[in-house]
Length: 539
Image 1 (tube, rainbow, N blue to C red):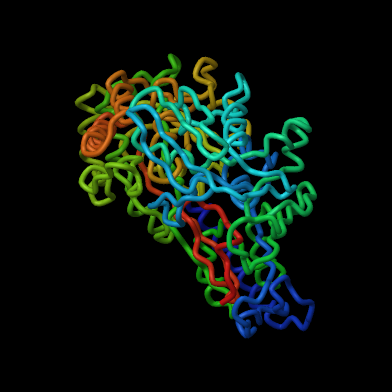
Image 2: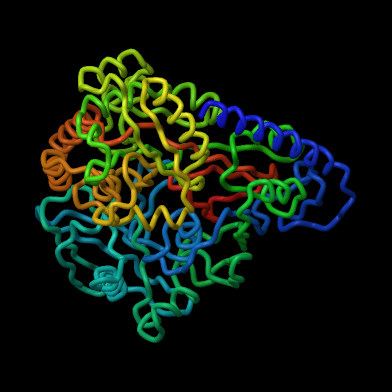
Protein backbone atom coordinates (compact mmCIF):
# COMPACT_ATOMS: atom_id res chain seq x y z
CA UNK A 1 0.00 0.00 0.00
CA UNK A 2 2.71 2.52 0.98
CA UNK A 3 4.66 1.60 -2.14
CA UNK A 4 1.59 2.41 -4.22
CA UNK A 5 1.25 5.80 -2.51
CA UNK A 6 4.90 6.65 -3.21
CA UNK A 7 4.44 5.64 -6.86
CA UNK A 8 1.36 7.81 -7.15
CA UNK A 9 3.20 10.83 -5.74
CA UNK A 10 6.07 10.27 -8.17
CA UNK A 11 3.65 10.16 -11.08
CA UNK A 12 1.98 13.35 -9.91
CA UNK A 13 5.35 15.12 -9.74
CA UNK A 14 6.18 13.99 -13.26
CA UNK A 15 2.88 15.34 -14.60
CA UNK A 16 3.53 18.68 -12.88
CA UNK A 17 7.00 18.96 -14.41
CA UNK A 18 5.70 18.21 -17.89
CA UNK A 19 2.83 20.64 -17.53
CA UNK A 20 5.15 23.32 -16.20
CA UNK A 21 7.30 23.05 -19.31
CA UNK A 22 4.27 23.27 -21.58
CA UNK A 23 2.84 26.25 -19.69
CA UNK A 24 6.14 28.16 -19.73
CA UNK A 25 6.50 27.52 -23.43
CA UNK A 26 3.09 29.03 -24.21
CA UNK A 27 4.31 32.56 -23.39
CA UNK A 28 6.08 32.60 -26.75
CA UNK A 29 2.81 32.33 -28.68
CA UNK A 30 2.37 34.95 -31.41
CA UNK A 31 -1.21 33.97 -32.17
CA UNK A 32 -3.34 37.12 -32.17
CA UNK A 33 -6.77 35.48 -32.20
CA UNK A 34 -8.98 37.39 -29.72
CA UNK A 35 -10.77 35.46 -26.97
CA UNK A 36 -14.27 36.16 -25.70
CA UNK A 37 -12.87 38.83 -23.38
CA UNK A 38 -11.00 40.57 -26.16
CA UNK A 39 -7.53 39.64 -24.91
CA UNK A 40 -4.94 38.08 -27.17
CA UNK A 41 -3.67 34.56 -26.79
CA UNK A 42 -0.32 33.97 -25.17
CA UNK A 43 -1.15 34.95 -21.59
CA UNK A 44 -1.35 38.74 -22.15
CA UNK A 45 -4.87 39.15 -20.77
CA UNK A 46 -3.65 41.00 -17.69
CA UNK A 47 -2.51 43.95 -19.84
CA UNK A 48 -5.88 44.66 -21.41
CA UNK A 49 -7.54 47.89 -20.29
CA UNK A 50 -11.33 47.76 -19.89
CA UNK A 51 -13.83 50.56 -19.61
CA UNK A 52 -16.40 50.46 -16.84
CA UNK A 53 -19.71 48.79 -17.75
CA UNK A 54 -18.35 47.50 -21.07
CA UNK A 55 -20.38 44.54 -22.33
CA UNK A 56 -18.34 41.35 -22.57
CA UNK A 57 -18.55 37.57 -22.92
CA UNK A 58 -17.08 34.82 -20.74
CA UNK A 59 -16.00 31.25 -21.53
CA UNK A 60 -15.85 28.71 -18.70
CA UNK A 61 -13.97 25.41 -18.93
CA UNK A 62 -16.22 23.01 -17.00
CA UNK A 63 -15.36 19.43 -16.13
CA UNK A 64 -18.71 18.03 -17.33
CA UNK A 65 -22.11 18.99 -18.67
CA UNK A 66 -25.58 18.18 -17.31
CA UNK A 67 -27.61 15.35 -18.78
CA UNK A 68 -30.60 17.69 -18.95
CA UNK A 69 -31.33 21.39 -18.45
CA UNK A 70 -34.53 20.58 -16.58
CA UNK A 71 -33.76 22.23 -13.22
CA UNK A 72 -35.78 19.62 -11.34
CA UNK A 73 -33.55 16.83 -12.65
CA UNK A 74 -30.11 18.35 -13.18
CA UNK A 75 -27.98 18.52 -10.08
CA UNK A 76 -24.35 19.12 -9.12
CA UNK A 77 -22.37 22.14 -10.24
CA UNK A 78 -22.68 21.28 -13.94
CA UNK A 79 -26.46 21.48 -13.75
CA UNK A 80 -26.52 24.43 -11.36
CA UNK A 81 -24.33 26.50 -13.64
CA UNK A 82 -27.11 26.36 -16.21
CA UNK A 83 -30.11 26.39 -13.88
CA UNK A 84 -29.08 29.42 -11.84
CA UNK A 85 -28.45 31.51 -14.95
CA UNK A 86 -31.55 30.59 -16.97
CA UNK A 87 -34.13 30.34 -14.20
CA UNK A 88 -35.22 32.50 -11.32
CA UNK A 89 -36.37 31.54 -7.85
CA UNK A 90 -38.70 32.81 -5.18
CA UNK A 91 -35.62 33.22 -2.99
CA UNK A 92 -31.95 33.38 -3.96
CA UNK A 93 -28.90 32.95 -1.74
CA UNK A 94 -25.98 35.33 -1.44
CA UNK A 95 -22.53 34.14 -2.48
CA UNK A 96 -21.50 33.21 1.06
CA UNK A 97 -24.63 31.12 1.63
CA UNK A 98 -25.40 33.13 4.73
CA UNK A 99 -28.38 35.22 3.65
CA UNK A 100 -31.64 34.57 1.79
CA UNK A 101 -32.35 37.29 -0.79
CA UNK A 102 -35.82 38.12 -2.23
CA UNK A 103 -36.16 37.45 -5.95
CA UNK A 104 -39.46 36.36 -7.52
CA UNK A 105 -40.89 36.58 -4.01
CA UNK A 106 -40.50 40.17 -2.81
CA UNK A 107 -41.43 39.30 0.79
CA UNK A 108 -42.89 36.56 2.96
CA UNK A 109 -44.47 36.01 6.35
CA UNK A 110 -45.43 33.18 8.65
CA UNK A 111 -49.23 33.24 8.86
CA UNK A 112 -49.44 30.48 11.48
CA UNK A 113 -47.35 27.55 12.72
CA UNK A 114 -47.77 25.58 9.49
CA UNK A 115 -48.41 28.26 6.84
CA UNK A 116 -45.92 30.47 5.03
CA UNK A 117 -47.23 33.21 2.71
CA UNK A 118 -45.12 34.51 -0.19
CA UNK A 119 -45.84 37.74 -2.05
CA UNK A 120 -44.74 37.59 -5.67
CA UNK A 121 -43.02 40.12 -7.90
CA UNK A 122 -45.26 41.67 -10.56
CA UNK A 123 -44.44 42.60 -14.17
CA UNK A 124 -42.08 39.67 -14.68
CA UNK A 125 -41.90 37.77 -17.95
CA UNK A 126 -40.26 34.51 -18.96
CA UNK A 127 -37.78 34.63 -21.83
CA UNK A 128 -40.52 33.52 -24.26
CA UNK A 129 -42.76 36.45 -23.24
CA UNK A 130 -45.07 34.44 -20.98
CA UNK A 131 -46.17 36.35 -17.86
CA UNK A 132 -45.07 35.11 -14.43
CA UNK A 133 -47.69 34.74 -11.68
CA UNK A 134 -48.85 32.43 -8.91
CA UNK A 135 -49.99 29.79 -11.40
CA UNK A 136 -46.36 29.15 -12.29
CA UNK A 137 -45.41 28.62 -8.64
CA UNK A 138 -48.29 26.18 -8.15
CA UNK A 139 -47.42 24.34 -11.37
CA UNK A 140 -43.76 24.10 -10.36
CA UNK A 141 -44.66 22.51 -7.02
CA UNK A 142 -47.23 20.16 -8.61
CA UNK A 143 -44.59 19.00 -11.08
CA UNK A 144 -41.95 18.47 -8.39
CA UNK A 145 -44.27 16.24 -6.39
CA UNK A 146 -45.57 14.13 -9.29
CA UNK A 147 -45.37 10.48 -8.14
CA UNK A 148 -42.26 8.59 -9.20
CA UNK A 149 -40.86 11.64 -10.99
CA UNK A 150 -37.60 11.67 -9.04
CA UNK A 151 -37.91 15.44 -8.73
CA UNK A 152 -38.71 15.87 -5.04
CA UNK A 153 -35.89 17.52 -3.11
CA UNK A 154 -35.11 16.89 0.54
CA UNK A 155 -35.61 20.55 1.34
CA UNK A 156 -39.24 20.44 0.17
CA UNK A 157 -40.32 17.21 1.82
CA UNK A 158 -41.64 19.25 4.74
CA UNK A 159 -44.48 20.55 2.51
CA UNK A 160 -47.98 19.16 2.87
CA UNK A 161 -49.88 21.35 0.38
CA UNK A 162 -49.82 24.69 -1.43
CA UNK A 163 -52.46 27.06 -2.76
CA UNK A 164 -52.92 30.21 -4.80
CA UNK A 165 -54.33 33.09 -2.75
CA UNK A 166 -54.40 35.51 -5.68
CA UNK A 167 -52.36 36.13 -8.83
CA UNK A 168 -49.37 37.31 -6.82
CA UNK A 169 -49.73 35.51 -3.49
CA UNK A 170 -49.22 31.85 -2.61
CA UNK A 171 -49.48 29.92 0.66
CA UNK A 172 -47.27 26.95 1.47
CA UNK A 173 -48.56 24.58 4.16
CA UNK A 174 -46.04 22.42 6.04
CA UNK A 175 -46.56 19.14 7.86
CA UNK A 176 -45.29 20.68 11.09
CA UNK A 177 -43.54 23.77 12.33
CA UNK A 178 -40.85 24.76 9.81
CA UNK A 179 -38.72 27.73 10.69
CA UNK A 180 -36.59 28.03 7.55
CA UNK A 181 -39.03 27.70 4.64
CA UNK A 182 -37.57 30.64 2.65
CA UNK A 183 -34.11 29.04 2.76
CA UNK A 184 -35.53 25.72 1.57
CA UNK A 185 -36.93 27.39 -1.55
CA UNK A 186 -33.60 28.72 -2.76
CA UNK A 187 -33.13 25.86 -5.25
CA UNK A 188 -36.74 25.70 -6.53
CA UNK A 189 -36.54 27.10 -10.06
CA UNK A 190 -39.87 28.50 -11.24
CA UNK A 191 -41.14 27.05 -14.54
CA UNK A 192 -43.55 28.58 -17.09
CA UNK A 193 -46.72 26.50 -16.81
CA UNK A 194 -48.12 27.35 -20.26
CA UNK A 195 -44.89 26.53 -22.11
CA UNK A 196 -44.35 23.32 -20.14
CA UNK A 197 -47.90 22.18 -20.96
CA UNK A 198 -47.14 22.54 -24.67
CA UNK A 199 -44.09 20.26 -24.78
CA UNK A 200 -42.86 17.02 -23.23
CA UNK A 201 -40.65 16.91 -20.16
CA UNK A 202 -37.79 15.62 -22.33
CA UNK A 203 -38.19 18.52 -24.75
CA UNK A 204 -38.19 20.98 -21.88
CA UNK A 205 -34.89 19.51 -20.69
CA UNK A 206 -33.40 20.28 -24.11
CA UNK A 207 -35.10 23.67 -24.66
CA UNK A 208 -35.66 25.27 -21.26
CA UNK A 209 -37.42 28.59 -20.70
CA UNK A 210 -37.00 30.58 -17.51
CA UNK A 211 -37.24 34.14 -16.23
CA UNK A 212 -33.64 34.43 -15.07
CA UNK A 213 -31.07 36.84 -16.52
CA UNK A 214 -29.97 34.50 -19.32
CA UNK A 215 -31.50 32.18 -21.90
CA UNK A 216 -30.26 29.24 -23.93
CA UNK A 217 -28.54 30.14 -27.18
CA UNK A 218 -27.11 26.76 -28.19
CA UNK A 219 -26.25 23.34 -26.75
CA UNK A 220 -23.81 21.12 -28.60
CA UNK A 221 -23.73 17.89 -26.61
CA UNK A 222 -20.36 17.07 -25.05
CA UNK A 223 -18.96 20.31 -26.44
CA UNK A 224 -20.53 23.48 -25.04
CA UNK A 225 -23.65 25.23 -23.76
CA UNK A 226 -23.93 28.94 -24.55
CA UNK A 227 -26.29 31.34 -22.76
CA UNK A 228 -27.12 34.90 -23.78
CA UNK A 229 -28.75 37.79 -21.96
CA UNK A 230 -32.54 37.52 -21.60
CA UNK A 231 -34.01 40.80 -22.84
CA UNK A 232 -37.17 40.13 -20.81
CA UNK A 233 -35.28 39.90 -17.51
CA UNK A 234 -36.89 42.00 -14.77
CA UNK A 235 -33.67 42.82 -12.91
CA UNK A 236 -30.60 44.90 -13.53
CA UNK A 237 -28.92 44.37 -16.89
CA UNK A 238 -25.65 42.47 -16.39
CA UNK A 239 -22.38 43.52 -17.99
CA UNK A 240 -21.70 39.95 -19.13
CA UNK A 241 -23.91 39.48 -22.18
CA UNK A 242 -22.98 35.87 -22.94
CA UNK A 243 -21.49 32.96 -21.03
CA UNK A 244 -20.38 29.68 -22.57
CA UNK A 245 -19.72 26.52 -20.58
CA UNK A 246 -17.36 24.23 -22.47
CA UNK A 247 -17.22 20.59 -21.39
CA UNK A 248 -13.53 19.65 -20.93
CA UNK A 249 -13.15 16.61 -18.63
CA UNK A 250 -9.34 16.60 -18.38
CA UNK A 251 -7.86 19.18 -16.00
CA UNK A 252 -4.62 19.38 -18.01
CA UNK A 253 -6.63 20.30 -21.12
CA UNK A 254 -8.68 22.86 -19.21
CA UNK A 255 -5.49 24.48 -17.95
CA UNK A 256 -3.90 24.48 -21.40
CA UNK A 257 -6.99 26.28 -22.71
CA UNK A 258 -6.71 28.87 -19.93
CA UNK A 259 -3.02 29.50 -20.66
CA UNK A 260 -3.79 29.78 -24.37
CA UNK A 261 -6.38 32.47 -23.61
CA UNK A 262 -9.31 30.54 -25.12
CA UNK A 263 -11.20 30.30 -21.80
CA UNK A 264 -11.54 32.76 -18.92
CA UNK A 265 -12.40 30.53 -15.95
CA UNK A 266 -11.35 26.94 -15.23
CA UNK A 267 -13.26 24.89 -12.63
CA UNK A 268 -12.02 22.05 -10.42
CA UNK A 269 -8.43 23.17 -10.41
CA UNK A 270 -6.13 20.64 -8.78
CA UNK A 271 -4.21 22.11 -5.78
CA UNK A 272 -0.99 20.89 -7.40
CA UNK A 273 -1.49 23.43 -10.19
CA UNK A 274 -2.13 26.53 -8.05
CA UNK A 275 1.48 27.77 -8.09
CA UNK A 276 1.72 27.16 -11.83
CA UNK A 277 -1.35 29.29 -12.55
CA UNK A 278 -0.28 32.06 -10.16
CA UNK A 279 3.16 32.23 -11.74
CA UNK A 280 1.75 32.65 -15.23
CA UNK A 281 1.27 36.30 -16.23
CA UNK A 282 -2.36 37.33 -16.59
CA UNK A 283 -3.93 34.54 -14.51
CA UNK A 284 -4.58 33.67 -10.89
CA UNK A 285 -5.90 30.80 -8.81
CA UNK A 286 -8.93 31.61 -6.67
CA UNK A 287 -10.29 29.39 -3.89
CA UNK A 288 -13.41 29.33 -1.74
CA UNK A 289 -15.06 26.95 0.69
CA UNK A 290 -17.37 24.53 -1.08
CA UNK A 291 -20.66 23.04 0.03
CA UNK A 292 -19.08 19.60 -0.55
CA UNK A 293 -18.19 17.53 2.52
CA UNK A 294 -16.25 14.36 1.63
CA UNK A 295 -16.23 11.43 4.05
CA UNK A 296 -15.58 7.71 4.26
CA UNK A 297 -18.93 5.99 4.70
CA UNK A 298 -19.26 3.00 7.03
CA UNK A 299 -21.70 0.27 6.02
CA UNK A 300 -23.64 -0.74 9.13
CA UNK A 301 -26.62 -2.28 7.31
CA UNK A 302 -25.11 -4.93 5.08
CA UNK A 303 -25.08 -8.38 6.70
CA UNK A 304 -21.93 -9.18 4.68
CA UNK A 305 -20.14 -6.07 5.99
CA UNK A 306 -17.52 -6.73 8.70
CA UNK A 307 -19.33 -7.27 12.00
CA UNK A 308 -16.52 -5.39 13.75
CA UNK A 309 -18.00 -2.14 12.42
CA UNK A 310 -21.08 -2.57 14.60
CA UNK A 311 -18.99 -1.75 17.67
CA UNK A 312 -18.80 2.02 18.21
CA UNK A 313 -15.30 1.61 19.69
CA UNK A 314 -14.12 0.26 16.34
CA UNK A 315 -15.67 3.19 14.47
CA UNK A 316 -14.01 5.60 16.87
CA UNK A 317 -10.72 3.77 16.38
CA UNK A 318 -11.01 4.30 12.62
CA UNK A 319 -11.36 8.05 13.27
CA UNK A 320 -8.42 8.18 15.67
CA UNK A 321 -6.26 6.35 13.14
CA UNK A 322 -6.40 9.05 10.44
CA UNK A 323 -4.00 12.00 10.34
CA UNK A 324 -6.29 14.52 8.66
CA UNK A 325 -3.82 17.37 9.03
CA UNK A 326 -1.15 15.44 7.16
CA UNK A 327 -3.52 14.57 4.30
CA UNK A 328 -4.77 18.15 4.02
CA UNK A 329 -1.23 19.48 3.99
CA UNK A 330 0.45 16.89 1.76
CA UNK A 331 -2.37 15.84 -0.58
CA UNK A 332 -4.47 19.02 -0.73
CA UNK A 333 -1.67 21.55 -0.17
CA UNK A 334 -3.80 23.04 2.58
CA UNK A 335 -6.91 23.50 0.40
CA UNK A 336 -9.46 21.83 2.71
CA UNK A 337 -11.05 22.70 6.05
CA UNK A 338 -10.95 19.96 8.67
CA UNK A 339 -14.27 19.15 10.33
CA UNK A 340 -15.05 17.14 13.46
CA UNK A 341 -18.40 15.97 12.00
CA UNK A 342 -20.25 16.76 8.77
CA UNK A 343 -21.63 20.05 10.17
CA UNK A 344 -20.49 23.06 8.11
CA UNK A 345 -20.18 26.51 9.64
CA UNK A 346 -23.13 27.85 7.60
CA UNK A 347 -25.49 25.18 9.00
CA UNK A 348 -27.96 26.13 11.70
CA UNK A 349 -26.61 25.53 15.21
CA UNK A 350 -23.00 25.04 14.13
CA UNK A 351 -20.75 24.64 17.16
CA UNK A 352 -17.00 25.14 16.87
CA UNK A 353 -16.62 23.03 19.99
CA UNK A 354 -18.56 20.13 18.50
CA UNK A 355 -17.79 20.32 14.78
CA UNK A 356 -14.83 22.65 14.32
CA UNK A 357 -11.58 21.25 12.99
CA UNK A 358 -9.64 21.97 16.18
CA UNK A 359 -11.92 19.52 17.98
CA UNK A 360 -11.87 16.76 15.37
CA UNK A 361 -10.66 13.29 16.32
CA UNK A 362 -6.90 13.77 16.84
CA UNK A 363 -4.37 11.54 15.12
CA UNK A 364 -3.74 9.01 17.88
CA UNK A 365 -2.84 5.54 16.57
CA UNK A 366 -2.15 4.31 20.10
CA UNK A 367 -5.69 5.24 21.16
CA UNK A 368 -6.98 3.53 18.01
CA UNK A 369 -5.14 0.31 18.83
CA UNK A 370 -6.33 0.48 22.44
CA UNK A 371 -9.97 0.82 21.36
CA UNK A 372 -9.61 -2.11 18.94
CA UNK A 373 -8.16 -4.25 21.72
CA UNK A 374 -10.90 -3.18 24.10
CA UNK A 375 -13.48 -4.21 21.51
CA UNK A 376 -11.79 -7.61 21.14
CA UNK A 377 -9.95 -6.98 17.86
CA UNK A 378 -6.36 -6.50 18.95
CA UNK A 379 -5.22 -8.52 15.93
CA UNK A 380 -7.22 -6.32 13.59
CA UNK A 381 -9.50 -7.50 10.77
CA UNK A 382 -9.92 -7.19 7.01
CA UNK A 383 -12.12 -4.61 5.31
CA UNK A 384 -12.91 -3.32 1.81
CA UNK A 385 -12.73 0.35 0.86
CA UNK A 386 -14.62 1.27 -2.33
CA UNK A 387 -13.95 4.48 -4.24
CA UNK A 388 -14.13 6.18 -7.60
CA UNK A 389 -11.57 8.80 -8.47
CA UNK A 390 -14.19 11.43 -9.38
CA UNK A 391 -16.19 11.13 -6.17
CA UNK A 392 -14.45 14.18 -4.76
CA UNK A 393 -11.24 16.08 -5.33
CA UNK A 394 -8.17 13.81 -4.94
CA UNK A 395 -10.39 10.93 -3.88
CA UNK A 396 -7.89 8.25 -4.89
CA UNK A 397 -4.99 9.81 -2.99
CA UNK A 398 -7.22 10.27 0.05
CA UNK A 399 -8.41 6.65 0.02
CA UNK A 400 -4.88 5.31 -0.36
CA UNK A 401 -3.73 7.45 2.56
CA UNK A 402 -6.70 6.36 4.72
CA UNK A 403 -5.95 2.72 3.90
CA UNK A 404 -2.31 3.18 4.86
CA UNK A 405 -3.24 4.72 8.22
CA UNK A 406 -5.71 1.89 8.95
CA UNK A 407 -3.05 -0.70 8.11
CA UNK A 408 -0.77 0.99 10.66
CA UNK A 409 -3.23 0.01 13.42
CA UNK A 410 -3.53 -3.58 12.20
CA UNK A 411 -6.49 -3.41 9.81
CA UNK A 412 -6.01 -4.99 6.38
CA UNK A 413 -7.65 -2.83 3.72
CA UNK A 414 -8.60 -3.94 0.22
CA UNK A 415 -8.88 -0.74 -1.84
CA UNK A 416 -11.36 -1.32 -4.67
CA UNK A 417 -11.79 1.17 -7.50
CA UNK A 418 -15.10 1.37 -9.38
CA UNK A 419 -16.24 3.44 -12.33
CA UNK A 420 -18.06 6.60 -11.18
CA UNK A 421 -21.58 5.83 -12.43
CA UNK A 422 -21.25 2.17 -11.43
CA UNK A 423 -20.43 3.03 -7.81
CA UNK A 424 -23.25 5.56 -7.66
CA UNK A 425 -25.68 2.95 -9.00
CA UNK A 426 -24.50 0.44 -6.40
CA UNK A 427 -24.72 2.85 -3.46
CA UNK A 428 -27.77 5.01 -4.18
CA UNK A 429 -30.76 3.07 -2.87
CA UNK A 430 -28.54 0.00 -2.97
CA UNK A 431 -28.86 -1.05 0.66
CA UNK A 432 -30.87 -4.18 -0.15
CA UNK A 433 -28.51 -5.37 -2.90
CA UNK A 434 -25.44 -5.63 -0.63
CA UNK A 435 -23.00 -4.83 -3.43
CA UNK A 436 -20.84 -2.50 -1.33
CA UNK A 437 -19.53 -3.82 1.96
CA UNK A 438 -17.32 -2.16 4.54
CA UNK A 439 -16.14 1.37 3.73
CA UNK A 440 -16.83 3.67 0.80
CA UNK A 441 -15.72 7.14 -0.29
CA UNK A 442 -18.61 9.56 -0.71
CA UNK A 443 -19.50 13.21 -0.39
CA UNK A 444 -22.57 15.34 0.10
CA UNK A 445 -23.21 18.94 -0.93
CA UNK A 446 -26.25 20.14 1.02
CA UNK A 447 -27.68 23.57 0.28
CA UNK A 448 -26.45 26.55 2.30
CA UNK A 449 -27.74 27.07 5.85
CA UNK A 450 -29.78 23.90 6.20
CA UNK A 451 -28.15 20.47 6.73
CA UNK A 452 -31.42 18.68 5.95
CA UNK A 453 -30.25 17.41 2.56
CA UNK A 454 -27.22 15.66 4.02
CA UNK A 455 -29.08 14.38 7.07
CA UNK A 456 -32.06 13.09 5.09
CA UNK A 457 -29.98 11.63 2.29
CA UNK A 458 -27.02 10.08 4.08
CA UNK A 459 -27.69 9.87 7.84
CA UNK A 460 -31.40 9.25 8.37
CA UNK A 461 -32.40 5.59 8.19
CA UNK A 462 -34.43 6.14 5.00
CA UNK A 463 -31.71 8.11 3.18
CA UNK A 464 -30.81 7.10 -0.36
CA UNK A 465 -27.12 6.77 0.55
CA UNK A 466 -27.52 6.07 4.26
CA UNK A 467 -25.89 2.88 5.48
CA UNK A 468 -26.51 3.80 9.09
CA UNK A 469 -29.59 3.44 11.26
CA UNK A 470 -30.20 4.93 14.68
CA UNK A 471 -33.67 5.72 15.98
CA UNK A 472 -32.40 8.43 18.34
CA UNK A 473 -30.65 10.22 15.49
CA UNK A 474 -33.77 9.87 13.33
CA UNK A 475 -35.82 11.48 16.10
CA UNK A 476 -33.37 14.37 16.42
CA UNK A 477 -33.44 14.97 12.65
CA UNK A 478 -37.25 15.04 12.77
CA UNK A 479 -37.13 17.54 15.65
CA UNK A 480 -34.68 19.75 13.77
CA UNK A 481 -37.24 20.19 10.98
CA UNK A 482 -40.08 21.35 13.22
CA UNK A 483 -38.37 23.46 15.89
CA UNK A 484 -37.43 27.12 15.81
CA UNK A 485 -35.07 29.60 17.43
CA UNK A 486 -32.98 28.54 20.40
CA UNK A 487 -34.71 25.17 20.58
CA UNK A 488 -33.63 24.39 17.02
CA UNK A 489 -30.05 25.39 17.79
CA UNK A 490 -30.09 23.09 20.83
CA UNK A 491 -31.34 20.16 18.74
CA UNK A 492 -28.68 20.85 16.08
CA UNK A 493 -25.94 20.78 18.69
CA UNK A 494 -27.28 17.60 20.25
CA UNK A 495 -27.17 16.04 16.79
CA UNK A 496 -23.58 17.13 16.27
CA UNK A 497 -22.57 15.63 19.60
CA UNK A 498 -24.35 12.36 18.84
CA UNK A 499 -22.75 12.08 15.40
CA UNK A 500 -19.30 12.75 16.82
CA UNK A 501 -19.65 10.02 19.44
CA UNK A 502 -21.42 7.41 17.30
CA UNK A 503 -19.23 7.83 14.20
CA UNK A 504 -21.44 6.88 11.24
CA UNK A 505 -18.45 7.92 9.08
CA UNK A 506 -14.75 8.44 9.12
CA UNK A 507 -15.05 12.21 9.22
CA UNK A 508 -12.77 14.20 6.93
CA UNK A 509 -13.14 17.85 5.88
CA UNK A 510 -15.01 20.47 3.91
CA UNK A 511 -13.75 20.77 0.36
CA UNK A 512 -12.31 23.98 -1.05
CA UNK A 513 -13.05 24.72 -4.68
CA UNK A 514 -10.17 26.13 -6.71
CA UNK A 515 -10.54 27.99 -9.99
CA UNK A 516 -8.13 29.36 -12.56
CA UNK A 517 -9.24 32.85 -13.54
CA UNK A 518 -8.14 35.44 -16.09
CA UNK A 519 -7.01 38.71 -14.53
CA UNK A 520 -9.35 40.54 -16.89
CA UNK A 521 -12.21 39.40 -14.64
CA UNK A 522 -13.38 40.45 -11.21
CA UNK A 523 -15.20 37.43 -9.81
CA UNK A 524 -15.62 35.71 -6.44
CA UNK A 525 -16.63 32.00 -6.20
CA UNK A 526 -19.78 31.01 -4.36
CA UNK A 527 -20.32 28.46 -1.59
CA UNK A 528 -22.85 26.60 -3.74
CA UNK A 529 -20.23 26.24 -6.54
CA UNK A 530 -22.42 27.84 -9.21
CA UNK A 531 -20.93 30.33 -11.66
CA UNK A 532 -23.47 33.12 -12.19
CA UNK A 533 -22.70 35.36 -15.13
CA UNK A 534 -24.34 38.31 -13.34
CA UNK A 535 -21.62 38.08 -10.67
CA UNK A 536 -18.78 38.47 -13.19
CA UNK A 537 -17.37 41.92 -13.88
CA UNK A 538 -14.43 43.24 -15.81
CA UNK A 539 -11.40 44.00 -13.67
